[in-house]
Length: 510
Ligand SMILES: Nc1ncnc2c1ncn2[C@@H]1O[C@H](COP(=O)(O)OP(=O)(O)OP(=O)(O)O)[C@@H](O)[C@H]1O
Ligand SMILES: [Zn+2]
Image (spheres, rainbow, N blue to C red):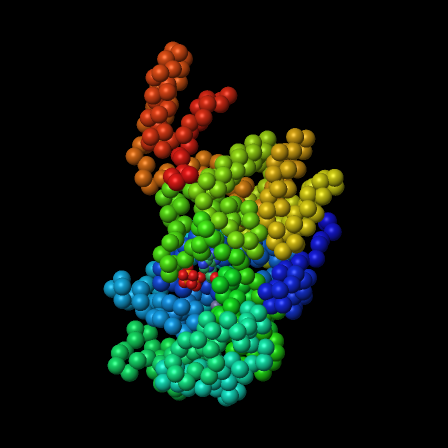
């Protein structure tokens, strides 16, 4: 076994890179803020879960068992992250004339399907907010007993001045600008940063989702939900809490304040708070459901982009950098993945059937635990001279999940002229444990997704290519060019190579 590097992770709480040490030496507990299921997840949202998947795979690579919880927010998230606007779920139900429960079930299923298509491991526990109302009331009750809440006309509020370190995560300047931005809410709010733990239903209108509580009829606050579900499944102190960077300023500061008041401690709940940067459009505009400027995974698929191409695109950047979405960049990732898959296919043909390949191809590592078993099986047959590549993978991933460097090293393996095929394939299998690109089981032909807008069938394409080959043989280059243009108009690009003419769909927009 190669020497392993200490796992360095960036902690937003304190803003420093530090060595990850779990509470339990063998078992890591992770909570990820899940989607608000009032619409399809956009590909920016999905970046948050590819990041978490890389984290999970890295922890498993390091030999840890992982308990991972993702919640489903089906109540309580308002159209602003602070206490303004409508409940996103209620608003969607009214607009779409469906019940809130229908909306939640539909978009939850779509979200889970997207995770599957991106080869993201399922969490150990899916936790739905509305299944935990009882626990939320009990948690809020304890906050009241601790004297950190007060009741106004429209809800029960958390008094943030009662928590000495409030806002540490977001580096909030409570006296200055930051506070000014957050002045909102009803008369009587004691501090600008105070937030609703429970919101009362209006007296003249029945809400679609509401529950009886000791304080009146209403619905839980979004921040309360995550405090309750994370600590219920992972304990009052757990290892890692993740979310997008937008959660660092409000949502997670509020969760921390609740955790601290509830457990009467300074401990924020999770030891590591990790945040992924945004997927942005040109001019750094955040892709956002609320703004409506978003693309879904299905939009990409309809345009002929395989979900794993999108996964590769995300892995080309550190999770802590803004990543700009362009069709050109996606087209580049498509070409790159195709090249990798073709190379892996050649290696597989050369190696033929092998027991160790069967182990590596099994999707067993979905559960997290058997990673070490697969890793050991793959490393056992590796030449000593090549263990440097395993070391390089471990080093890159231990450097705050630096997937771009992992891809550079993988490129070196695939381009290596002298490495025996079996050895190269073992290394690819090891790298893919962390990258999750399904490199051993995806056929390069699987990448050629048919765009939804295509008007030409595969048979017609092949027939036109055959006609063009004949025209070229007869040196009728005018006819050959005409056929090429006809294919281009139908969205098909062709390339003449030593083994004949290959074709692929052009990515619309690229
Ligand atoms: N453009 C983005 N890039 C990366 N992560 C994002 C982006 N937008 C949201 N996220 C993250 O996606 C996860 C799920 O978010 P959620 O479903 O609550 O989105 P939302 O707030 O309803 O939608 P939006 O912010 O797009 O209006 C969160 O961790 C959030 O921080
Ligand atoms: Zn949350």
